[in-house]
Every structure is written in structure tokens, then in C-alpha cells.
Image 1: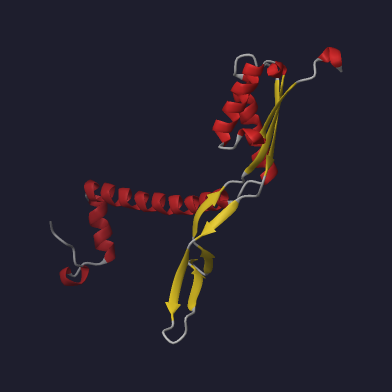
Image 2: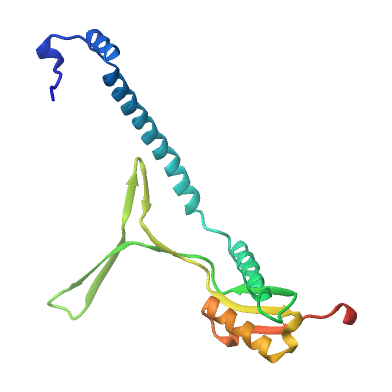
Length: 185
């Protein structure tokens, strides 16, 4: 493979462009390289914006509504449950865990330990933000299920087992009651 050195060969940019235009393979290669660079730049620009949009946490009320809808769909699919309404209460909001450096020093002349915690910062241009390790979704305080089939103890038990397994909470945090019928209203 030959390398083209402009100064050594006495070529100018005009003569180089003329050679590229004359050689279709070179022109195609340069065009593909230019296209690749444009696509790379475009993906970086759109990728950054997408990451920033994903970083915005869902509001706790929105998170609870989504969870209620998913649980209601799940419970409705249980045999005998019938029409279902679900209420989810949250214990806390979303929690973010940030990376940090922990150092501990023990001084030899005193029996005390000294510890220091500093957060890891990441620079992006002129911006400086903390390094996010993970986001913990809000914890569930309790679930209330109101459904038509709750008068059957077996249906109540299946619903309670399903909710506790799905959310990882104890049975004491789940209430399943019979829905009021149209005649009793």
C-alpha cells in the first residue's frame, strides 16, 4: 500500500482532488468515510440527549399508578377474581446511589479512627456531575385489592400469594376484599 505524502511528492490539494475524482474507488472510499463520520457524530449527539431523558426519574405517583395497572391486569387473570381495582401505597420515593471513595486513617497516638467520604465526580465538557451507580425504585408500603371474587377464600389466597411474590412484600401488607356489587350500592 502506498502512502501519499503531499510535500514529498510535490502534489497540491487541487491535484489530489483531481486524482480522487478520476479514481472511482478512491472517491467511493472517501465518501464512505465521510458518511461514517457524519453518522458517528449524529449518534453521539442524539445518544447524549437520550441518556439525559432517561436520567429523569418517574414521579412516585406515576410509578404507583403504573404498578397498580400492572397488578390489576395480573389479578384479573387469576381464575375467579373478576373485576378488580388495586391501590398501591409507597413507603419512600426513588433513591439514587452515588459512587464515592471511602478512606479510613487510624492515628497511632490516639485510639480514634478517622474516615473520609468523597463522591466521585465525572466531567463532561464544563459540567461536573456525580457518578450514579444505580437507582432504587420506591419501596411498597402496602397493596389493597378490591375484586368481585374475594368472597372465596381460595381466590383471596391466590391473589395474596401473587401480589406478595410479584412485589416481594409480606402477606400482612396485602388486603383483599370483596367488591361491592351494583345491587348493594
